[in-house]
Length: 80
Image (cartoon, rainbow, N blue to C red; front, side):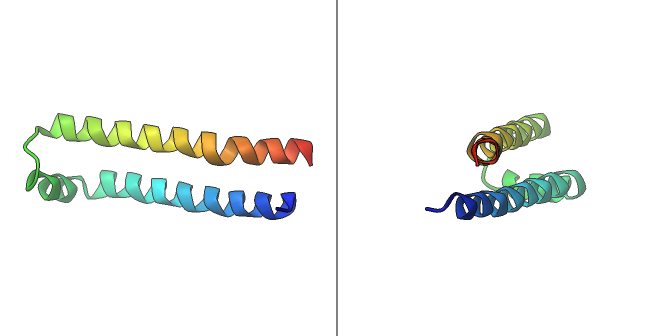
């Protein structure tokens, strides 16, 4: 695969993943009560646990973006 093509794919992937992270964060901030009621149908846990799960999930997702998109993209930019 051509390095320029790979850079383009990683850049599109980075944009998509960060937009998904921002949508998740926006939903969490502005529709928190609705999301909590929706999840409360299936799981019984307090709101603090719900918040902890979501913050931890966003953290893991962001680390995945950094490791799987930003790091390879930066390496390709430095090499080519």
